[in-house]
Each structure stands twice: as structure tokens, then as C-alpha cells.
Amino acid sequence: MLNAVMFTSCKKHFNSSITAEGKDGIQPFSFNWETVDWMPTPAVVGQSLINPPWIGQGSITSIYGIDVVNDHKASDGWVLVYNTFNPNSPGPLQNPYFILYNKYRGLMRIYFYVTSPISNNSDYLVDGLTASTTGTTSLLNFLGNDIVDVSQNQLSYSQIEPGPPDGSAPLATNKWYMLQYELAYDPNIANTNYNNIQLSWYTNYNSISKISLGGPLIGSVNGTVGSSTSNINSSLLNGVRVVTTAGLSLAGSSAVNNASGNFSGVNPIVGPDGRITAYTPTTMNNKLGLSNETFTALQKGLNSAFSAATGNIPGAVAGLLSAIIGGSSSAQTVSLTLNAKLQLDGTSASRGSFPASPTSVYVPGTIIDPIAAQGYIPLYANSLGIFNLSSKPIVNVNTTSIKVNQNGGTYYQYNNLYTVNTSSINYLWNSTVINSTSTGASIKNLKTEVVLIDPDLSANPVIGGNIGIIGTHTVITGSSVGTTYTVPRVQPRNNYVAVRITFDVVPNNGTTPKSTIIKTFLANLVNN
Image 1 (spheres, one colour):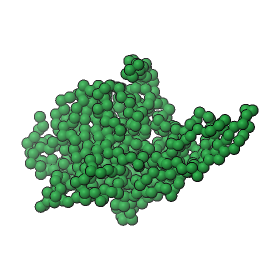
Image 2 (cartoon, one colour; image 1 turned 30 degrees about the vertical axis):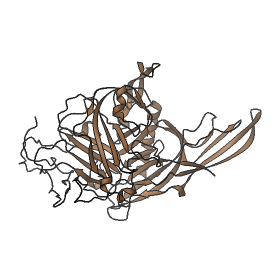
Image 3 (tube, helix red, strand yellow; image 1 turned 120 degrees about the vertical axis):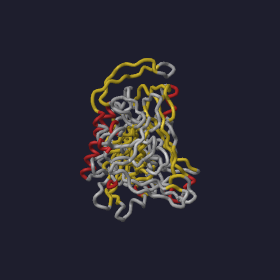
Image 4 (tube, helix red, strand yellow; image 1 turned 60 degrees about the vertical axis):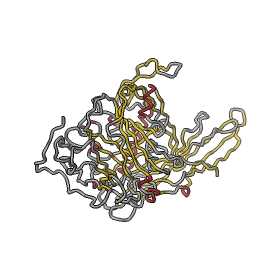
């Protein structure tokens, strides 16, 4: 049972409350999350003192690296959006939460504290985010995708969270949890009535025996794995399930390096009905479930991106298609997404919903009537996200061919040059962030590159560009990309192309560190 606590200490506790006098909409209690020793809770029977998420009992340090734990400073761009902690509450708080958002990185973090008793054993926390709207929105398009198709809006996303390194059950009472989501800028939000769109998230628990992300099956989830096309929680009902559009998300500069080593796994033996009948042991160089080749490429790509971000070298991001690097004064941090082929071997014995789930809130930046609105209204009133594209970019391909004599016969040599049509890229910048004010930021070192995805290599083409492995894809990248095929007849078609956009977000205040954003968009291919 929770203990009753009276607040008689002289320690820092909270700032003065912000109220909504004469209004139906509730302005959340505002507090300084950086300096409090205890969260703002009421002095009532049944309410215990609660440490902030980054220190003390139940902190998130058991799951995330210290760089992520300490990355919450207002000076680095974090703002308080919602909060259900309140010292003036008439009774004990039930599973309270607060939401921080980084306006220079487009990252939203939900920190919630469990007060409800957890009676079921669980292996992993499964959470999801949904945009409930009368129309559509691109707000969630960046989630789980390292190649974004701007012509297809996604309205829901689910993911599996990593558990503590010691293998203990992740769901427990009197414990903090953090959910992170990368949001895209949707300019239509500013013209949308608050009643026409809400953000809701849920938290469930489930059991997972083994997981693979394109490599051998392993016994634990060590990164956040998400999908916009499949509810991961329900996919475990039937045992083995493959989610081809899954994305692996990693938070923290140590997330990749700490996954390196020699680890044991198994390769599945699949029966005629598609189910696993047995396993054969194997070893791997990472504990993420990636293939050895994919993980090695990821390591190299992340290291080059860190060097580029530190040395102000735009575009040197081989090995990554989607990432946010830097932006923290405490340590260089990263949030990245990698495409993967997800295979889960699980059970549904302890599958269920988390207490008080789902939870919904109004979307910041919408037109909110503080008198008519019910419940909490956001403390941060600006639109979320840094940027987006209004339409698919275009990659031009110029193809020439000549006849050549080879191997005693006549062949055709096809020379292809792929270039970005820069005039086709219609940027949508969030003007509440990208502006000339002291609290705004500027875009610097903007660069675009061609990404030729899964080219046909069977005819041994001559490659012009950087070829490598990114997740499940073989890619050729560069400011321009070339392929030369010498074949008896028609050359193989390579129509799967994208544009990788890299830029720095540099705050105008001169003190907040810059962030480097890498985002790749599916493109239309046009012959010219």
C-alpha cells in the first residue's frame, strides 16, 4: 500500500500553479522539471513522494543511457506541453504523466509513472500513438519509416519498447516509463479546430520469446521496434508473425555501440505450415537481432554521421536514412530509424492493457477555444514538427546507350545518370520554429542526395556513387548516382528511388547546440 506523506521538507518541490480562472479548459500545472527534487503531488493520504524520472527510485536509467536520461533541459529546446501532476489535486494521483517536446528536433517524450498495482507478469511494454481526426494528417508520417512516402499519410503507429538489461519485467508499480515519438510538421494543423483531431496513446503488455530483425532470432528486444501497418501487440496472438514494414528506432549515442559484441542466437527451421519447428544455434555481432552485415554498416554509418555533425560536414551520412543527431548540451545524442524485417516468436499468455489506457490529448497548434474545451489544454500552443514536404520529390534519370562488341557478340551499354530535381522539392518549414526571432532557429548546410534503392546488381553494373547496406536495403547514394549496364538486350529496371535531405537546425540564441536532421523521402523517377 502507498504511504501517506506530508510535504514539510524545505527541498525544492514545485513552482506556482497556472490556473484557468473562469474557463472550462484546464491549464496544466506548470513546474520546473529540471530542478525539482520531487514531482508536484498533493499532500493527501495515499500519496507518496515521487522522484523525477531521471533520478532516484523507479527512474528510467535502467533502460536508457545516461545521455538520453540527462537530455531534458529547457536550454536545449525542451518545453512542457502537458502535465497531470498537481499539488492541488483533491486526492492521490493515478498513473500521472507529463509530456516534453523538443522544438528544435521535433521529438515528443511522454513520461508516465505507474501507481496502479501490476498483477500480470510481462516481458515487454507495447505502446502506440494514433491521430484521431475527421480528416487526415501527416503528423505521424515520420514514425517507424526511414523512407517516407508523403503521398500516404499514416494515422497510427505501434512499437515494442526495450526492457531493462537485467531481464526483469518492464511493467511494475512505482516506476517511470518513457515513450518517444518523432513528429512531422503538418501546416494544416494551424487551421484545424481542436475538436477535429486528437492524439491518443496506449500502453499494453505482452510476452515475446524471440525476435529477429533480419538476422538470427534472439531472446530479448534491445531497441524500440515499431510498425505503422501492423498492430504489434495483436500480431503475437498467432505466434510467429512477420511485419515487413517494421522500423528499429534507437535513442542515445551509446545505443549502437553497447549492442556490439559476441552474442548467441538461433536460426529457425520452418515447417510446411510456416511455423517454426526447431532452432539451430548461431552467433552474431550484435544483440539487436540485425544481421551481422547490417549491424556493421549501421555502426559505420552512425560514426560517420557523428563526425559529420561535429565537424560541420553536411551530407556525410552514409549508412543512415533517418536520424536526428546532437542538440544536447550534456552529450551528443541520436534518435535514428532503420528499416527491418521483423519476426516475432511470442505468446499471448499475459497480453493485456495498461491501466487507464488509452489516453488522449488535444493537438498543440490547433485552434483551441479555452472556454468550450473540456479537460487539459496544451501549455505549448505552437504546431509540432520541424519540416515536411508537400509532395514527392523528383529524381531525373538520363539514359544513353551504344552498341559494343563483347565476348564475340553485340551488346548494349546503357549509361544511366540519376540526379535530384531540386526545383521539385517543396519544403514545408514550421515558421513557429524556423524564423529570425531569438527563440527561433535557422536552417543551414541543406543538402540533397539521390538514393537508388535495391538496384539490380545481377548484371554486374559499373557503379557511380557510394554503395552500401542500410537495414534491409542495398542502396547507392550520392549527389548524383550512375549505373552502367552492358547486357545482350534490355537493361534491368531500377525504379525505386528516394531523396535524402540533410540539414542543421541552428538555434538563433547562440547557446543551444545545433541538431543535424537526416530524412529520406520516396521520389518519382522521371526520364529526361
